[in-house]
Image (cartoon, rainbow, N blue to C red; front, side, top):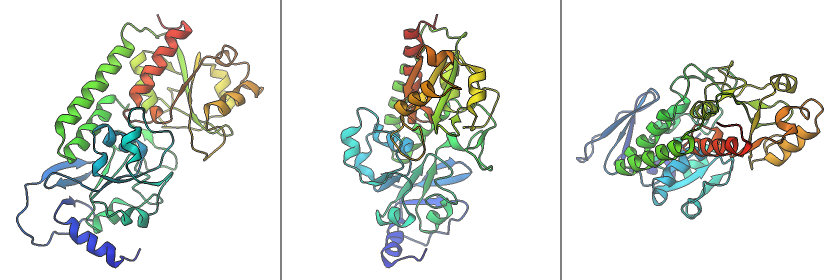
Length: 342
């Protein structure tokens, strides 16, 4: 994309604030003395933060957005994008003050129009070819980028799908992201406080729970070729915290597409259903998903369907974000309500 005069001048201004070194980064010209940099290793790249951090950050996915808002950084954000759900409860006011650039991926030009000094994303596909732009493209303009470690550590994104987990994801990786972003903005204490609150919520939700005899299935989206959770992503965190079993824990794919005959054959005790507000595919809302399950001849006789054992969670609760904690709470409460947890 040609660099406009506005973009070129904006890139010069950035040089006094933040620097990204690594693949695609260029050498910094001599400037006036600056504050010592804080180095951050992120998914194979090094980000160096100078001064007190970003003032015009852009978050390209809802997961990174809700972390920033939870850290009280709304006044240092220039834009957000890619939403599957309403913003997390308690963050509505803060979120309303930040420009929403797009419901899905914004254009590279749209992001640059905000004159960002930092860009964060939850998924490698967002900061890759076919996404908003690559990290290298942002680096050439002097814009540092951050990718959620949950989408690069212990995960292979080289295939055509949503990636394959080479190691099970844990909440520790999500907590590390919270600490990383807090550090970027010079708000380390806020990061530790948020991690402490999240950890406490998981402990309370699972206290005394024994769901070792319960089988779960996680349906994220699409009725025609449904995306179900494999063993080791965010649903794997929920399953492990509850001590239950995912009926598709024999696949390391993040979100394999599985036919309904196979689903019915495995006949899970409980269906954890993503209640998405986006309209990208069929069967996105929980209401539409349940309507399908109860009318389809292959699925309507499943045990969970006949007994209406549904747990409705946000799409973000099924992604590796701070809202995975929300998923733990909701599924734990439902299992107790169904009388399945000891």
